[in-house]
Length: 122
Image (cartoon, rainbow, N blue to C red):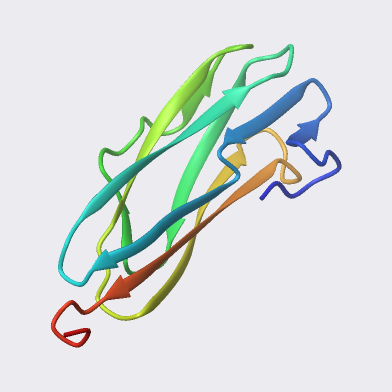
């Protein structure tokens, strides 16, 4: 989900940051398993953008750490692979991308997933 003055992305002047998808739903996964899904961050603006990324939620982690700061030229994108490792029933987290040049430039991608105990469902 995007936060900021633009509904379809964060617009901080000449920088426009978007994500695809805006919500990452891992669905129901067996407890103890690991699933990876990708989020594409796109600089849809006319100026380069430098980003810092943070991940919130104990059941989520990045498959690989991006360079810090992550620099995207106009029309460039970066694929972020997020791992989901369920340990209980419902999980929520966020991938946050903040532009280094502007405190208003914050994009939040909601991460959701559900842990399933296959033994309990027999």
